[in-house]
Amino acid sequence: IFILGIESSCDDTAASVIHNGQILSNEVASQKIHEAYGGVVPELASRAHQQNIVPVVHQALKKAGIEKSQLAAVAFTRGPGLMGSLLVGTSFAKSLAYGLDIPLIDVNHMQAHILAHFIDEPGFKKPPFPFLALTISGGHTQIVRVDHYFEMTVIGETIDDAVGEAFDKSGKILGLGYPAGPEIDKRAKLGNPKAFKFTKPKVDGLNFSFSGLKTAILYFIQKETKSNPNFIEENLNDICASIQYTIIRILIDKLKLASKETGIRHIAIGGGVSANSGIRNALKQGESKFGWTTYIPKFEFTTDNAAMIAIVGYLKYLEGNFSKQSITATARLKL
Ligand code: ATP
Ligand code: FE
Image (cartoon, rainbow, N blue to C red; front, side, top):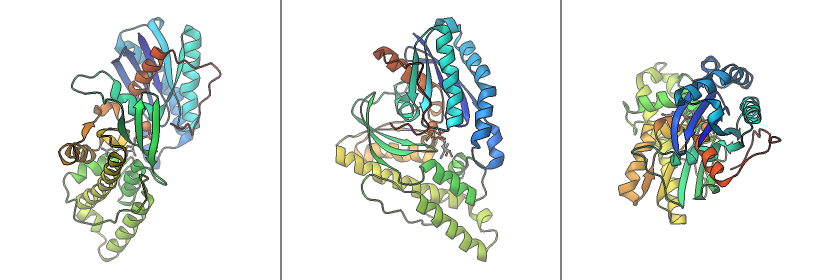
């Protein structure tokens, strides 16, 4: 069974072909244009998707070595995401499925970040049910209890900024480019995580808050640069390491609590921020420290990609769970 997955929720146009559980191609056209603006500009993203989608889908089919007539279904991201971006993928997928007279399958992007763990990939194990998923991305921060593929319950989430935003906004304060997450990660490896101390927010239960951290960093930098204008340049690696350390502590503390409350020790991470090496290490350490079994997806399946859409398409295909042509893109789609 060959299924085409299409992802266009934000600023990456992506297409992937999956054969049963195995990824045959995973193509992404990243939109460089937003770097100059320090964030994604929705109108430009939508236009770039329109330019990219046909070549990216072609490339995915070519890499997979199949013709579109061999496809069993077309899966696409319905939401959540930017409306203008989602509309391009949604309209394209609908037309293609209609033209080929094959099933159309809508996919929830956040569910896909979690179900990416079920892609067949040598050296990567699949989590058994029930497990806890920590989804950390540019727009979301959630702890999800996963009882089955499509039985997911959000048991904790951010009340303000997402972790990815915390990385990106901190980076902006430090004068780093967008997105700043990867750069902070790289510099954190060279710095002292305990050089500077940022207080952790107090949020009850399993919810998160990251907007206070951003403000704390802003005031800290304003204060330090007043007495030393070169403070950032002279301490950049230490600042990055300290910010990342604080973020990791916030995440791990909540995961510990979630694991304790649910009695579940299988912990999976997903979403773009799970590419972060410090978070990966901290999670691994949880294995010996807290008796966790952890699941960390292959790097290319963490940031936005179409392989994760294709695997959900495949799982839904097996259940005969198809969408109607009347389905619409939904910017604020819930899990
Ligand atoms: P959502 O999935 O919530 O709709 P999104 O699709 O924009 O949001 P992703 O592509 O999943 O988000 O993740 C992008 C985010 O991941 C950005 O905020 C980026 O800074 C962050 N990120 C990527 N790599 C790293 C890294 N190594 N360390 C920290 N953050 C990272
Ligand atoms: Fe995403």
